[in-house]
Image 1 (cartoon, rainbow, N blue to C red):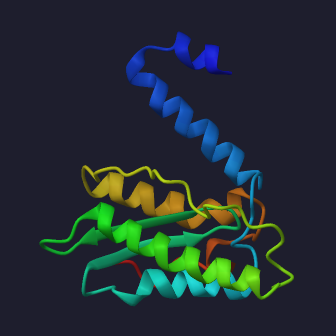
Image 2: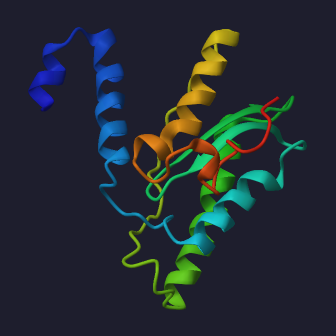
Length: 161
């Protein structure tokens, strides 16, 4: 697989790598620490906590093994610091739940989150709508629900600004 990626032109390698990771995640591989309702609810609350203060939350979905968030940082707020804050808070809560032997968690990796994250700039209204649709349809694509608004850990049921 690495050889196939290296055979691509450099500008296409990251795009293809991301597609492959997304497919792998959507298939439910890896640690699914977010699958428990109590952990998914906590992660969703963490995203919402500083909405309107540090950022404007535009769309999100908490999947069993990953999260997608579309947000606009407020003036003076760095994307990296916002994401680090979410990861630090939720990791602490997840590890506390694991220490309390919460049955739905199973084995929790340490660290809970990968250090890096993928970010992108939204180019225009069409790109914005495409990204929102991708985020909201993630649980449908992963065969977790039939309709995006049926997934409780998502903004799909709420109007998007």
